[in-house]
Length: 271
Ligand code: AMP
Ligand code: MG
Image 1 (cartoon, rainbow, N blue to C red):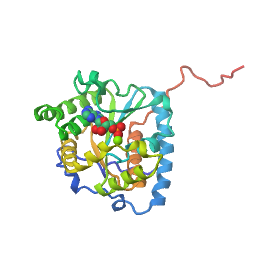
Image 2: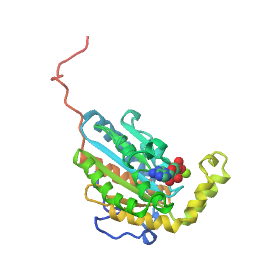
Image 3: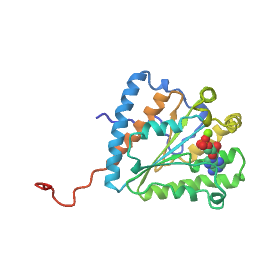
Image 4: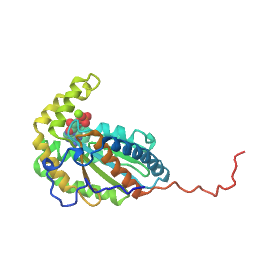
């Protein structure tokens, strides 16, 4: 089994981040789509086996955070990567515009309730990072409020890590050009139109503001316990491979094991 490289797209704590200078083109990292798809297939099978072990072991927790601009591939990544895992052990949560009840609490209240318990993989489709990105760009709270959140997020993630949660955060990084292509496909395909919203076009107009907000969030909230990965997203095949490599590589390190039977089973025959 080859060792998987976990560092290619991983940010370092303290590293300055400027997303507009980070590659979105997967072809800069891989030139063979067929080989990538073949490797991905094998990794997805392996992931399903690790997930069975994690669940059976019932000790460790894995949190996967996905953020991206609209049409950046969050939904498709979840479907392709976790499609073969056991739904009993994988919980996917999509965080939308907060409800009145959620807004009546601190911003981490709704998040904390959804973090994975022992044996579970939790997948966040959007997350507490919306509270330092969309909230900042749309000026939903004063700067002093969102600025304090970087440290609050780091403390929160530290708490999760200290209590047995492995945290992986992926920013799926698409170009503005690729977003246009994806939006147009949604508009032109009746089975995808439901995914399109006019609000997406408003957000697209604020692209630079989003890049600045994401860049700062990724830089300030990359810690040893909870690193961000910036995944080139313009080619689906590379995006999927890059995420799968990090997930499987991490699970290999976590190395969950099937528990031993409660008693020695040798010679036990069921009548
Ligand atoms: P979608 O993922 O396309 O279903 O859209 C969900 C929407 O909810 C996106 O526009 C997010 O920016 C928005 N959203 C998620 N969390 C928050 C938040 N904490 N504050 C404001 N908007 C949010
Ligand atoms: Mg949307």
